[in-house]
Each structure stands twice: as structure tokens, then as C-alpha cells.
Amino acid sequence: MAWAMTLGLVATTARAVAGDDLALWRVYDSTFASARYIDLTHAFSPRQPMGIGFDPIKVGAAQSAVSIPGIIAKGDAFSYEKQGVGITAYTLPTDQIGTQLDPPAHWTAAGATISELPATYAVRPLVVINIAPKVAKDAGYEATRADIDAWEREHGRIPKGSVVMFRSDWSKHWNEPQRFTQKPFPGVSLPVLQFLHLERAILFHGHEPLDTDMSDDFKGESWLLRHHYTQAEGVMNLDQVPEAGALILIGYAKPEGGTGGLARYIAVAPASWPHGVTIEQAPGAPLPEYSVPLRRDSDGVLRRLSR
Image (cartoon, rainbow, N blue to C red; front, side, top):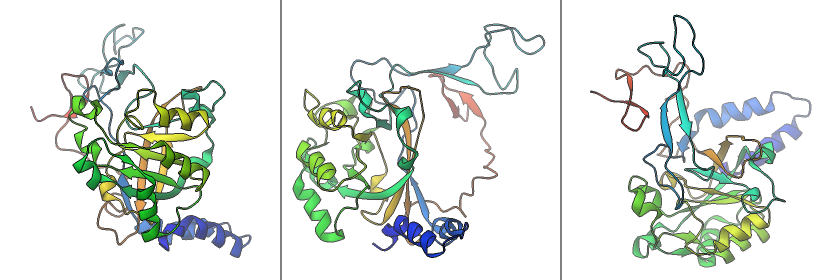
């Protein structure tokens, strides 16, 4: 639980050493540098589950709009073989796709768009409420107030401004697109959403399916967005994250006026946690060189194919 207060410690440290511009760097060195990082985000591709009514994603090599003598002709596709570069074109049929962040503008013209969300979304305490055992018995199970109460009895009050993720393990069906979006699937009940926002003042909640619940009128999502809250959808790997004590890093594309957006969520767990990767294990610079080169697959996606 002490590690869960890292954000508070950042502020406290900064106040205690007034005028010390390096206080945050010391918090990074003492905590984040040795922490474990867990990706909660699906990679998107034409093979992924899609909401009903949307065309699939289209992916392929980008084509040149002009002729560049000695390099490429107008209309030709860029490739490693001819130009020595990989440039990919994406056709997204909707901004409600994959692991995403839903802003209020999705449901109301008076609501904030993706490009109007504040920079303070970047890092928050992460709460994980495990409903997976109940979902294993009932695929259509909806999280209830009893699930919240059980978490708080064990871990204490849900922190103000935190992100609350509901672990259902539904993400394990991601490679079964038809089953993933087919009812029944797990959800979060409207009373739970109202309690979390009105009584615990959370930033937003997240779930593994692509919808908040199975209701025909999208009652949970409608209430959230019409009351100017956001939500995360299509997250994964919550089975690798501690129920309490982690942080979440939040990144998302910033389309102007966006009514939805692909997002990247990363959990930061204590150094003692058994899952995830450390900065020492994956420093990020330089990145690894792979023995198998990228090739365009039949769906247009660059993959490391051995053929």
C-alpha cells in the first residue's frame, strides 16, 4: 500500500525540499527506475474484434502521391526492397476501436473531445478489481457494489483520482473476434459506475470487453459520457497487475475533435512484483535488432514471418 502513495510522495518530496528542482528525478531513481512495467494494451490489426456495424481495419504499404525520379513512381508502394523504408497506411473505419479511451464527446456535443483532455491524465494510482472468478462461472456477470466493498475491506478506500480497472480475463478471447464481441460478455453495473465517480471521485474506470455492459441502450456508457466522465475499453493483462499498489501511465493519440481514440495503458508495479519488465531488462535504447526481418502479411500488416 505504501508504494501506491508514490504520487503523494512526489508532491510531498517536492514541498519538503522547496527550491530543489531535482526532487522528481530522485523519486524516479528510487522508485520508477527499478519498477516493473506491464503493457495493458492490445496491438491493433485487421484481425482484431470490432464493434457491430463497423468495417474492418485496412492496412497496407503506403503509396506515393507523386513521382520522385530514381526513387518511386506515382502510385507505387514504398518497400524495404525498393526504397529501403517501411511506410504503412492505415484505414480506420471508426475511432471506437481496440484498446481505447472514450471521451464525453462520444455521446454529447457539449462534451470534451480527446484533444481537450488535460495533461493530468498522464499518471494515476491504479486499482484492479478482480471479477474473473465470477465471470468464469457466468460470462455475463456485471461487477456489483459487493465487489467494490470486498476490495476496500482488503486494501482500504479507493484513492481519489485513481483509475479503476475491472479484471475479467475477457481479453484472453481477443484472438477469437466473433466470441469476443458476442453476448454474453462481462460488464460493470451502472450503480457501481455511479458509486465510483460520485462517492470515490475516480478519474475513470476500464474494462476488458469493448462495451461497458450488455444493455441495448448502453446505459452505463451513456450515463458516464453524458455526465462528462471518460472510460477505458479493451484493456488486457490485468491478471499480471497487483490489485493495489501500482500506478498507471496513460497515453493516447490526439486527433483534433476526436470522439474516441486508440490508447496505450501501462501499469507500473513495485520492483518486488513477479510480473512485468524492468528498465534494466528493456532499456529501450538501443532497441533490439531482430534475426527475422519484417514482411507484409496477407492482411497488410508487417510481421516477422519466417518464410
